[in-house]
Image 1 (cartoon, rainbow, N blue to C red):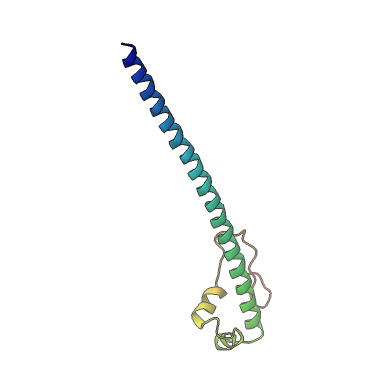
Image 2 (cartoon, rainbow, N blue to C red; image 1 turned 30 degrees about the vertical axis):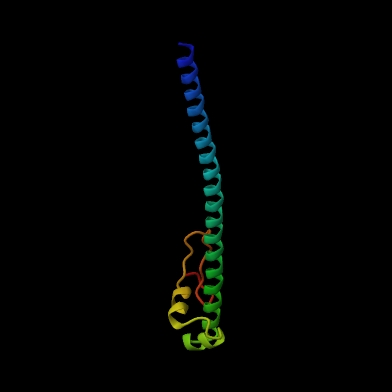
Length: 108
């Protein structure tokens, strides 16, 4: 009868060790996902900040009486008219919103 008890104990020990490994792997996975989530949120906010700066530059160029075609030329072709229109109207989703002003300096 002692051998059945030894087998049960070994089986319990093996099951416990397996559960421990799974828990440890889940903790490691959770840590990895948390780190990636932080990177994602930082990148989204940085992107919003960059696009808001682009919006402000486009509006300043428009205040200098440049049209979309001229802004395309000044951007060395990096932007097209569609992208200029998108950036001109850009509203940040992730960054803390700052007051948006019209090209003439008035609040929008």
